[in-house]
Image (cartoon, rainbow over all chains, first blue to last red; front, side, top):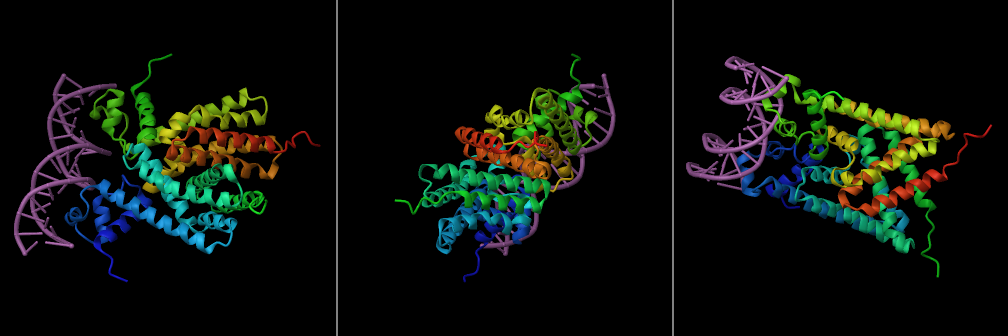
Length: 193
Length: 193
DNA sequence: GTCTATATCTCGATAGAC
DNA sequence: GTCTATCGAGATATAGAC
């Protein structure tokens, strides 16, 4: 494995800080301190804060694609693959209770800032939507596939917001059980003629 | 109606700006400009920015209580009252697509800022939770009442986040129809012996 | 590619005249 | 109760030595 470039290290640390403290509240000094370089050195790699945001969003896009590809290969059925998505809420529960969903909270913040990158952040959410739509279609949902995908994505976003506000792990587990029950109740029409 | 005091006017304008731009991104200068007073005059009314936040949260608590009381009086059944809650998503759809839910986004932002007022913001959400729990109990949900209330609150939060990200009014209407269907499917046990 | 030093701006907050 | 003037801190961003 090659040594990580300063450029990539900045993006990695900025990604974490934007998640944990928000984009606006994270300063160059915060990122520089996390990376271990001086503030001045920063501008050799990124000219503006918005450039870093673009790089962070691009990184999240890449990693999301890789994660979805992994679930696609590992899952032996659409239902199993959708469960991989759902179980993110359990796997990341501690971080979610502290900072919410990385994508949902970024979209909400950029909306309030009326930031130009708002559309690019939504693209990450669209990756999930399209992947889930594909799984729903494989379940035979046909023209209902996208609505079901959006509903599931929305459900997970609601759980994340509530978990952050109430810091309630039992609520997360309860809702995840509810989602699993809902998924199981969806009829599988893919074997029909 | 008495003339509105400068104090109350500051809180009203700050409330709107915190919603539309976020707490952190809203400066004293922004609020002062909206109210039409100088920055210096500000500190006669509020000593710190956190004091304004506390006043804004208190205002939202009051107004939420008043709204819930109104629904309680106007609604002729628990089901009707719950519909009043659900239809907020339709009535406020334009603002929600621009800025999300005022309460949910505030809780998320304060969580990332690790702000001391985080718990007070959650109290607003708790008002909705407890009121909805009461309605569910009136429907005969008994020990499931709070879980149903949290589920509905979570559902609405998810719709708000998604609506903000995708700017999709059809999605809101679709989900509201789904919530109405879910509500109608809940058995009413309140008439049972 | 990394550093120090600095410019400029805006922030929250204060002092004091009226 | 409202204003102007100003402080110190910290923000983004730049210049230039090494």
